[in-house]
Amino acid sequence: MDVRSGVGVRPAVVCCRGPGESTDGGFFPALEDRLARAGFAVVTCDSVANLGIIVAALGRGELGDVPTAIGVIGPGLGGSIATVRAVVTWGSKTAAPQLGGAPVLDLPRTQPWAGPGREYDQAFDATVSWFGRHLT
Image (cartoon, rainbow, N blue to C red; front, side):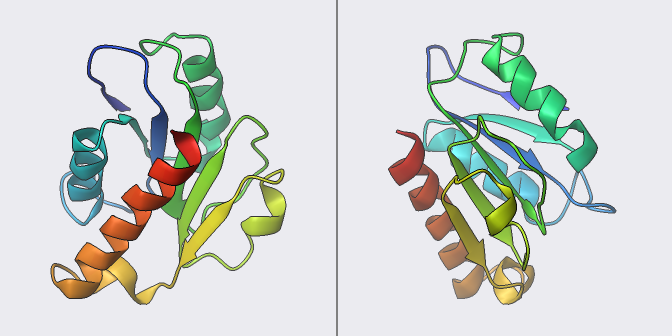
């Protein structure tokens, strides 16, 4: 787990990498940096199984300040997390009805897996914008 946060209370985004996702490469480090630059506290985890534990720890202030809101992003993310206020999935077909009414942005699997370029940047921009609208 990695926590990136500036000083002060802010919304948090949990970036839940899928099985086999690299912690050093791929698009997640770039997305996490972009979210942090946009003013979000960013928590990275490598397993959906740990997601509930991390969300609970955030809510208790165990990972820094208690966030004003919590969002989650991940590939094919599922589960029921009532405290989450916004979700972004990449390539998920089943997450929306499982997330207790949290608004879900589901980007197609073709983005951002295509790698750096226009679609990559559009997917990142859409993700940051979604969290900006629903968490702040």
